[in-house]
Structure formats: C-alpha cells, structure tokens
Length: 179
Image 1: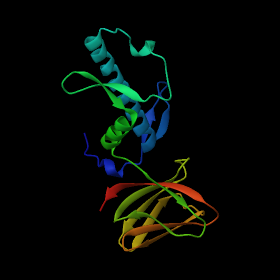
Image 2 (image 1 turned 135 degrees about the vertical axis):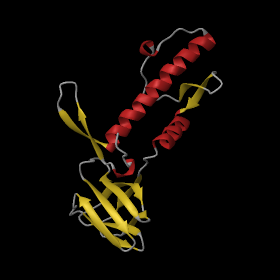
Image 3 (image 1 turned 45 degrees about the vertical axis):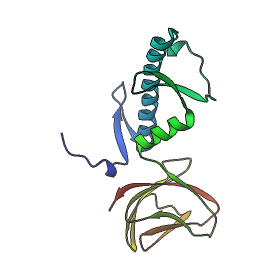
C-alpha cells in the first residue's frame, strides 16, 4: 500500500454497484463518512438503551424527525445518555477536522479569507464544482482549477484576500495543507 498524504487529496474515484466510475468530492466523502458515523453511534445507543431501560425499540421502528434536540449515545462507561445536537455537531466536526470558513464578499470590497502559507480549497458556498485550489507562498500565489472571473485574489505577507467583481459572492475556504 502506498503512503498517501491526505492533505493533498481533493477528490476520489468511486465505482458504483454497476461498475461505473464516478468522481466524489472531499465534501461528499466527508458527508458520507459523517452520516455512517452517526448511524453507527445511533445503533450503538439503541443497544445501550435496550440494556439500560428494557425498551426494545430499534432504529428502524422510530419516527424520523428533523428538529431533534438530543440523540442517544453510549458513554465510555457503557451507560446510555443523551447528547445535545450542538455537542454532537461539535464532536463530529472535531473528528472530521475539515471545517470551512464562510465569507460573503461584497462587490469591489477586499476581504481577508485565509492567513498563512499552504494550500487552500476555495469553493462557491452552494456548488463545489465552482472551486479552486490556491497555493500561498508568502507574497506569491498559484491558482489551480476554476479561474473565476467573478472573484479576484491577491496575496500579501501570506494573507489571501478576495474581491467580488460582479456582485455579492459567498465562498467557503478550507486549509488543506500547511507549508
């Protein structure tokens, strides 16, 4: 098996059940992994709840809600407990470690969107296919991918600035490699 530097990966090739290759973005992979983690946590918490309460209700028998305040979890002691959705989101965000910073760029107004040398993934907030990799080396930058005519980038002293050229733009930025 080869040694991969995961910080340099921006996507994956996947094969579906029919043998067709498909491109998968890092964000899609993170979503799939986090969904499976939540499912595994949920299944584990069901078994713990059954053991603790005798309530034999399995996940597929529970109603689906979109406004849950808490989830059932299994503590390291083996006891079932409740965790707030905010705490769960914080825990999963820490495990995944690929969090974005979001910015709204006003037309003609320069905004600091990244600080430090390295590689940054910059994408439109609603469409990952409109994205760029920006490599920052102190006062120099190199842009890979979408050369967006709607946003102008400038680097000075390892800081990445962006300016919307046509109108307000929303972008997400993630540091994927430190230099």
